[in-house]
Amino acid sequence: MSVDMNSQGSDSNEEDYDPNCEEEEEDEDPGDIEDYYIGVANDVEQQGADAFDPEEYQFTCLTYKESESTLNEHMVSLASTLKVSHAVAKLVLVSFHWQVSEILERHKSNSAQLLVEARVQPTSSKHTMVHSSHHCAVCMQFVRKENLLSLACQHQFCRSCWEQHCTVLVKDGVGVGISCMAQDCPLRTPEDFVFPLLPSEELKDKYRRYLFRDYVE
Image (tube, rainbow, N blue to C red):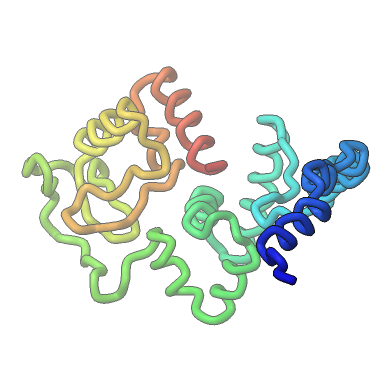
């Protein structure tokens, strides 16, 4: 007796195949998905709250008077330690970004080099001897000795040229950055040197504001 194998296999496959079976397997209960994500949002938020941010740091905002008081305390203490004027101590603090501990360490190791790096004292190789002739190196005019002014570098200029130099720079918004007029001389002018050279109270007030700006930056 002959048997149609193709027919038999076809019948068998048709009997076993259920068209709804794949749909039942693919369909998932929406409730299961929702249950899976329950609490995930809260976990993410908690992770964000507890995560460490390396760029985050604690700070305190000071008022103008509080800032000024803090600066003055450091200035007075450092001036006493370095045996310099208050104005020079401020320039040293600014040069080293008010890192008092670093300044004290450098002072212990080499106090002279500290002042050179702060641009308040010249290096020994650049120290200029006082000229016997009383002439200004800017306007080239001969002036009386008492009208010649200089910083620690001993570069002498007449009072009139110094006044003009400081006035122009303050009008341009310069504070701590006022320096010696000699070419390639890096020395900065302390505030007690500049204030008497400014011709008006308005300029002195501006200079005072620019100094404070530079001190706290």
